[in-house]
Length: 210
Image 1: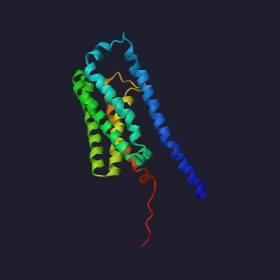
Image 2: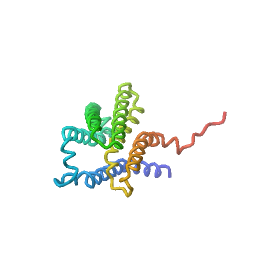
Image 3: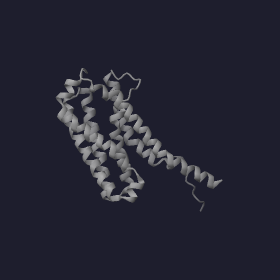
Image 4: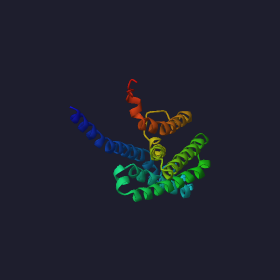
C-alpha cells in the first residue's frame, strides 16, 4: 500500500508542474488576446496615446515579454542540475529584462492617470526589490531563500497579465481597480511563502516523549 501511495504521489507531482505552466500560458494568452490585441486596430481611440509614448512602451513590452518567457526555464530543476551555466545566463537575461521594463515603467508613470501612477511606481519598485533580493541570495548561496525571491519576482511579472483578464468586476471605478492591483501585489509576496511552507501548514510534527 505504501508503494502504491508513493507511486501516485510521484505521478501527481510529475504532472503538477506542466499543468501549472499550462494554466499560466492560458491566462497570459487570454489576457493578451482580450485586452492588448484590440489596440492593434488603427481606429482604436487609444492609439494616439500609445504612439506618443512608443519609445518607452516598446522597450517596456519587449523586456517584460522576455522576462515572462525566460522565467519558467529558471524554475526547471532539470535545467538547473544539468546545465547550471545556462541557468545563470538565463538568470542574467531575466534580471536585465526586469531592470529595463521597470525603468521604462518609471519613465511612463507621469503619462498615466493619477490613480494608476502610484501603483505603477509601486509595482516597478517591488519588481526590482524582489529581483535584486533573488540575485543577492543566489550570490550568498542561500538557495532556499533565492528560490522564494525568484518566485516572488516572477509573480510580480505575471501581474501584467492578471490585470488584463476580462473579469466580471466594475473596473470603471478607479478605486476598485487600484484595490485589485494592490491585492495582486500582496498576493505576489505572500503566496510564494505559503506554497514553499505548505508542508509545515499541513503536517504536524511528532515530538518523541523524553
